[in-house]
Image (tube, rainbow, N blue to C red):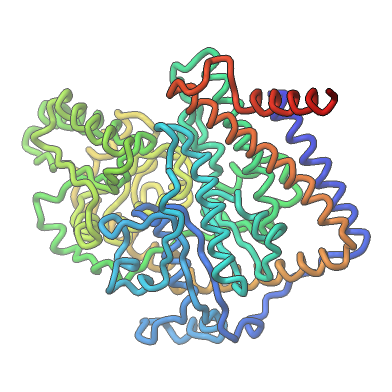
Length: 553
């Protein structure tokens, strides 16, 4: 705790000093958006850790697509097809450390994907974990390497777009002195995504003693790095008002940088062309429409509560309304066999279904293809979205456009996307509440169809790619403008700004070196190479002590 508080204090003092120094020589001009500024082709480089199947990956792909010229055959109304829409004519590149052709979106699949030729895989040799742990540290090292390679290959890029971790932003803006701007898209603070929390809510994991203290120290260092590096971005975007509030809450030292004008919301879109327009008349006549859950197989997705709720629903209807048909339950979603949690959690869910004696009514469909995904969402009686305090949640948007009402926890992003009682239900995070909501739709199919119609129109108007492309264009232009202001301020400050940021940078380098030394020590002790009393830092200290004694002799 002392280390974390000291780190925050030093970071705040240094940043405030550098801010005051730089403001003595220059003031930040107001930013005016002008589409004519980016009429020429721009080069936009996206840097993402793992280009798999998930909400973050879907967002990156949509950002890349929105950076390309709009397709000529888009059914875009004449009122929206203006100069601003067509101004972002960019060359797009995506740098990632992993992209499996069996576990990725169709846009990046070789050879037919529209973005397949834009993907560059670098640093695949870097480990994602160290002996099953250190995932956050490995992710930081991988994003640093990917960012370095992206800059090395494209030093003339106009804009670098990063997400997930901001660790490498100072590398681009301060050490490599990139000429382009840097934009960071924050899906959710990584500080709130640890094993000890579920979307920011602490959970009891049973870890106590020295190991727990070491983990807290290790995590505190990484959290400090995340908070310190995010301020170097020219513009920070978030996916919902909920995420913006969480960022401002957990990163208090960034209060000045992350005011509303510097921390903007860009809601993720869906590509409406991927979905078949729902046939509500046909849906009304169908008797076997399933209840669907669509999530990655991760514990934080809270899918277990749906199995409990479904077991209650089955028992309740059998006793109260035996004439009502009980629809099957389909648990589908992203599944990566390399991910230990995916493998373990799928087994856990199957075991739970067997324990609740509902295995005969439950189907598990891991790693569904795009076509199957669309089919499930279109034909569902309802989609049950179980994550608590979800950052945004793209599944509810896709489900509503496909014509299926959504039942979700009344927290986080779904509160901003689901109209309670009109396009679905927002319920408390317990199995009884989910059961009651499902029961309303199972016993009244016409209500489900009416909600599906409302949701389809709502999403079409608010979350389509055309509106998203317009918003993204404005964000890119603002990031370019802010990047220009930053570089001009650095030139005019006479080095004052550089002194501040480099001092913080050197502190970060020393911190990272200590983390690496600790990890190496743990690994060497694990394999018995060194004793329990030895450490890398201790050996370095002993070496220089011996050298000093030798010099004196």
